[in-house]
Structures are given as structure tokens and as C-alpha cells.
Length: 201
Length: 201
Image: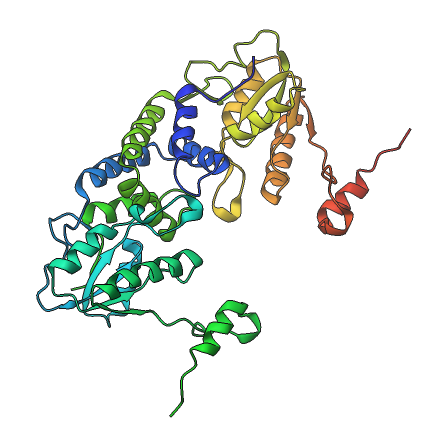
């Protein structure tokens, strides 16, 4: 008879490992923390989880996270309705908003085109983007997917579709990050920084 | 007006960051996963959390995690009642049980003596250990706290108390781990492996 954690603890560990980046070791530590040091947290956390799962919806227009029908940005008339910035995740949208330079709208894909991981075009809010462009007044799309292989492929894929629809598409510049030392730059970054070099003065 | 996640999502992120090793970035990713890909998980996980917080208790004798009054090990008459192995966490107990060599009982401290982190003797189940030894038939204690500074200090601290009570105390051997290459061993490990060297043949 081997010794194990109580059933309900094992169950909690199994559920926790379903979260991304949480392996069995981390799940066990988290479960122990919830049970041992901080039973109150188990209550408030599970409540917050259920509340968020009920409350948070996707904006009907741009698919950002929202608790209203349309998100804060889509409701804002002062934003440029002719430009949309296309991002993979809601976190990317927030990162761009923190810079506070962009004044257009967004479209959140909630996915990428990653055929090697079995994720085709249907794994992102692409049809929704196309019909939004068809119906609306969008004239420019900025492809702000990640600078990864999948992000690049997604950007290329979408830009072809949008260009055919008469939308100007641009991609975020790629090159050396601010503060980046040449010595430690990877080859792709360096090569892109070269090919995208700009004239000074 | 800065753009933010919906209130309930922000709340969920705040609650998640109260877990050990979860920073704001990880919490945001976890919250997004719970809300976006897998709302069902939000339900089952929060249920498992509440269930475990209600069900799991500490064994009245050894303070291992249990859902009965006394844990499986303390209930087992075939185990040697005169020897207790003292560990920091329930996970350590399971690690020792997996080796399946030890046949005595346990005592789980649920803490260490770590004065630099403001954790004194009262932060572990030490009084409970002392009264257990006082009442019982324990003649040997194996100090299986971690091989860290805090674990060593805890072992030393407890061994002095137990020795005064007439209990033989031993500490787990310290030295080279199996498969460890000398070249990469840290100085303390190497020094302990030297001072604890044993005669061959």
C-alpha cells in the first residue's frame, strides 16, 4: 500500500497541472500552499476564478476582453476608426496601449497560424476580421503579431488577404531592441536590423 | 483614461499573484488561459480548490496531510513506533516513502527555523513534537530536513532538544549525489563528502 496525498489534494494537483507552465512539482507546491498556509486564499481565489469566467466576455467588434458588450476602445469615438492594429493576445493590446502612441482600433486574434502545432487559420478570429473589414471603413492594418516564426507567418498570411481587399498593411519594425548589445544579438535579429537599416540625418 | 482588463480579470490576477512563484506576468497568462481557452477548467479548478481546503486536515499525531483523523502511516501497526523521521513538508515525506526503505513514523514540521526570515521555533510543529516524544515510546529521531542552511540549523536546534530528552538523533548523510560530477560539485557539498568519507571493503 503506497502512501499518497488525500484524494481531494490529488484532484487539486491534477486540475492545477492543466494550467500552462504548471508541472506536477509546481502544482503540488501550489496545492500545499493553498491547503496549508492560506486556506482563505483558496476561497477568494476560487471565487475570483468563477466570477471572472462568468463576467469576462470578448468585445463584439475587436475581441478584446471586456465586461461590456463593446470594449472601452471600440466605444471611444476619438479613436481613428480607419486603422486597426492586429495582435495575438489581449496582453499585447495592453502593451501597445502602455506606449500611448497608437490611436486606432484593435483586432485580437486569440491565436496564431501554427500548422506545425495543428493550428490553422480557423484557430484565430480571422473570419471575424475579414467581415469586419468588408463591412467597415478600415483602410490600414498594422500587423503586430509576435516577432516569432509563427507570428511572422501569421502576419504574412493575413496581410495577403487584407491587401487583396484593398487595405494597406504594415508590419511592426524588426531590429535591435533598445539597449541591445550587438555582441549578444542573435543572427536573425541582426540580419533584420541590417536589411531594415535607415538613413541618419 | 488608460485601458485595463475588466475588473473581475484584474481581481483574478491579483489573487493569483498571492500564490508562491507566481508573478504578475504569469498570473496574467494563467488568468487569460482560464478565461479564454478553458472556462470549464475555471469551474473544476475552483471546485477542487474549495473541496481540498475543506477536506484536507493534518494528522493529529504526525501532522501529515490526511482526510481522516490519523494518517495512513500512523494507523499502520506494522510500522516501527519507536522511530520518527522529521521532515519539513508533506512532499518530503512522500519522497522518502517512494524509496520504500524507511519503516518508522514521521513528524511533519510545516516550517523551518529561519530567524533571518522572521521564522522562529514557533513557526514549526515543534511543541507538538516535544509533547509527542514526552508521551510516547520514541527512542530514535532521524532529522531529514533539507540540506540547506535553514534545514541544517533546524536539525541542529531540534536535535539538541531531543538529545536532552534521551532520544538518539541522527541526520541524513550529506555528500555527493549519485551521478554527480566532482568538477561541478559546490564547495560545501565536496567538503561534506570529504569529512564524511567511508572506508571501502
